[in-house]
Length: 210
Length: 344
Image 1 (cartoon, chains in turn orange, yellow):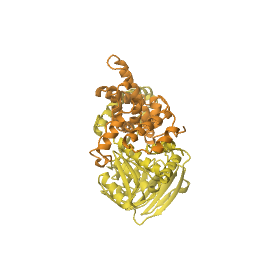
Image 2 (tube, chains in turn cyan, blue; image 1 turned 30 degrees about the vertical axis):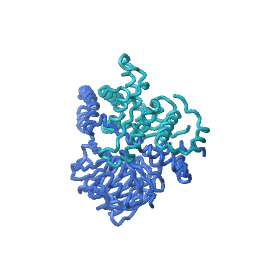
Image 3 (tube, each protein chain N blue to C red; image 1 turned 90 degrees about the horizontal axis):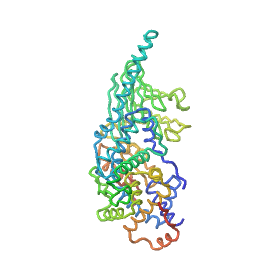
Image 4 (tube, rainbow over the protein chains, first blue to last red; image 1 turned 180 degrees about the vertical axis):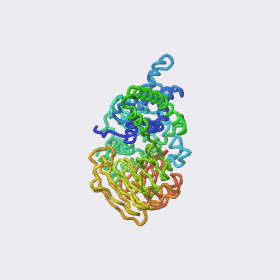
């Protein structure tokens, strides 16, 4: 699976300037990612305060050690990976309270859908009933599959970035996203072409386990 | 092609995970194969539907976010400033006997810079010390030293700006960008030099300006500099576009226009567009409204658009473009998909 490396030039540009101590660029990256990183941390920690603490720690670390930051793939996957790892450390610290196997908890990674946003009234493209179907289909996905799908659609990370963040292969990420979309399509459009379905079963190998 | 491969390709395409070769392949497939088209439409609904993920949790205003960011950067600042003060103090006390006077001058002359950043989705206007007025477009940065106005009149620009330069024959006003340096004495002109745009454009409204290449840019077409006349626009095309790539080649093109006034109309309430290809316009809209624009079809990018755009919400602007350019737009949160209008 040959892929180009994703480089968000704007992010990399800001990162270079952050390394030189530029505060405007630090603010730009902070504004762009802070809220979504908190939302991601919340998926794991289920606590507003803990989530914000973790994200603030990650950004403080970036600013204080700005000379040493080494971003291989993208700023986004670096940030989400840092938040992911720190959140897991917090959970490990509270072992008695919460199970460290956080992904087995079915409350995690709930899809939040909203029909349009007050600033973008036209965004309610998918009407009520269809929306409910998508919502319940997403929430019925296996947990790892749901997590990866939401990383892509909710937090807008690319296959390669999710792979980098969760330390799994890009092939696995792609397979999980494809499975998620196929399940959603099956849930939404029961009239799937039958011959298409048959040929697919023949050709499609079992998805890799993760 | 295997049906499962078709499905994979369509999904990757809709999710923006295709390289250029795969994109072409996907478009060809959707155009030529009815089953693929049906599949494409169903997946598009799902991808757009699952895109409308708007989480209200942790919603903060921009000012609150800036405040949080600054509480991190300011913590560090005081430490650094103290360190510098101590260092200067030590250096001064050691050297004061020998080269005291020289050191005094060096410390006194320390140049500091003011940076004026205009975020995406905004516009800015700034009056400089010498009476020069500058309008700065979305996603741009203007920087100048505290020597500005008496030792030099140099501003550093990344992005787009319109300048009405106050007359001062003794001190040349200069806009320095990565690629070019525009020199003026007292004129009105517009410079567009975004790092990720395909060209650097200088347009002159009044007076005269000299466009020279920057120190590190190899733009042979500029020679020792080109003098622009009013209503001329100098377009320097970059190849490749990525701003940090090396071995960039530049093509220089001098255009004579009937009236360049519309070029700087982004700063006004009514923004005029003249036969602008849709992909170029899309870049400007992305910066003006802080949105992402995608095209379902490459051919749409070359449709030319002429018209006037008021300071309207993005939906109304897109509707206006839909009507005049014969296209369809779908908005989902801050992403816009531009498609062919099937009724045409």
